[in-house]
Length: 330
Image 1 (spheres, rainbow, N blue to C red):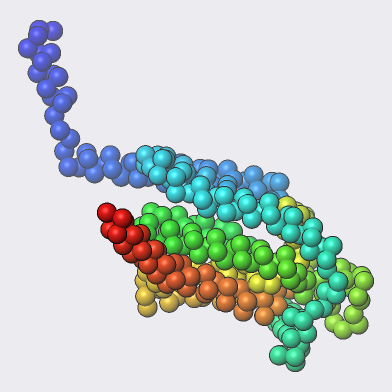
Image 2 (image 1 turned 120 degrees about the vertical axis):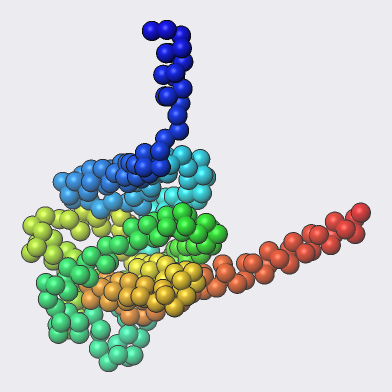
């Protein structure tokens, strides 16, 4: 091959790609960027199914890390997501300690919240739902939405991180405020859930003669799954059984809804179906009182208000103060 022929071949190789070829490469890249996390999710689901466990937030976050790494966002992802992972890990660690303290301090499971529930509604809403509307369909739907407790905030956080970074930071702060204030409440005021307080199988010290609240999730283990699926999850995740008030299952979906409404305005109204489904499931399954749900919504609203209204005002006034102080020093 002569020098000219080699040069001509080299020039042909350097010729820019056509529009169709560039579009094909872009499509292939997007498909691969989705395929890699999808493979990880499939492996994770198989692992969880075989060993009867539920994926923790950290494992879900790894899926998004794979996606970010493929798109060369690794450094930004790690920098932005370390605080969220630390919130989950620190909560799990501290909740274990709080759980031991709450267990030792628990005196009467049927406390003021349980009595207020009875006075407010005339009967226990959980008992009414279980006795009047119990069905396999409601069991599975309630269990599904209830099980999204930690997964939904991680998925929503990723969507904010990718499409609305400014709101991602706000969501992170509100999530932390809500989580830690709830943790402090668990320590100061432990509350037994309905399945414990109104079931002599668990409440041996203060048995009751009224109808029993069923812990539907554990009953599903025996009747539907034939294996201790939810029991394994509770043994691994639920280190504090007396953390009913406020309900984190109510708080997290509500914070997600508030930020969705902030961004999408009226177009985001369908998101309200999500917290409604989780709240219904929490009461129906016997995991929370209605007052727990109300408390979780109030805590979430306060966390959102502090993040979006009060903290910006404090930041602005502090910046103004510092600027004025520097000008006087000069």
